[in-house]
Length: 144
Image 1: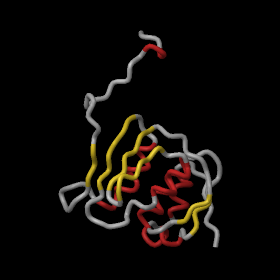
Image 2 (image 1 turned 180 degrees about the horizontal axis):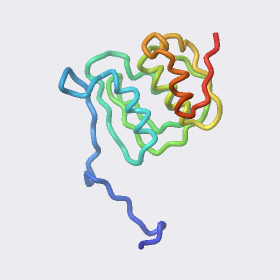
Image 3 (image 1 turned 90 degrees about the horizontal axis):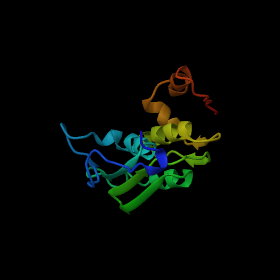
């Protein structure tokens, strides 16, 4: 076995940076782009995300960057995510349901206790989301 300090990083795709872009069926669904960006921040490697369908959907990444995610916003439609980032807690605001659930997932991966304001938009699309995450072992609390 090669000692850890002497190992070279290898990627499945060689030197190519994978890209994820959304589109109408059967392409990748735009509604999952936010969650996949959070996932990419927690995995090894670099990935380009290209949001083609909706304007301003990626603006929530500024909040992920505040948490410690290594993200470069190229323009309103493209971000490059390099993982594995240690995320840190903070107070954030959910701009919409998709970005909101992504922020919840990021907060669960972060060190410390986070507060997500405007969380009622998340509850509109995810019934009892706090109880569902708690059933998986998360410590969550909804405050009015």
